[in-house]
Image (cartoon, rainbow, N blue to C red; front, side, top):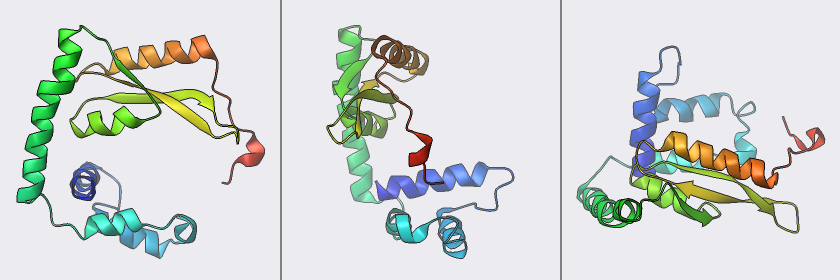
Length: 158
């Protein structure tokens, strides 16, 4: 994930028009410079720093991407097309990580609450280009279940 995170974040930041932060390195420096504002003590930036230590996609990462592409085409995509599915549904966000790595869209919405009040979700994943349908399905689920509860303002830590 670190390699992909670094490459994707650098590509995204590079195309921004007005941002002074143009790379992962810039983001790390910015966070350190504004550590109080960015709440570095509370949240850290371990993921940023681990990703920054990577040097792009090497032979091993290329092989993993090739395997992932094959699995996507012969697995997820085949399942969706052969069964004429609009979405694949899973509890929590398990599917989102797997399908997003293959370039497929996914969405997660609240499905309930643990006994301590922490929400858990249900995920809907689809084929490339199915974002409008996934949003429609997720919205319909939310409207049908009315599970989502906005947190009380007193719990916000801004």
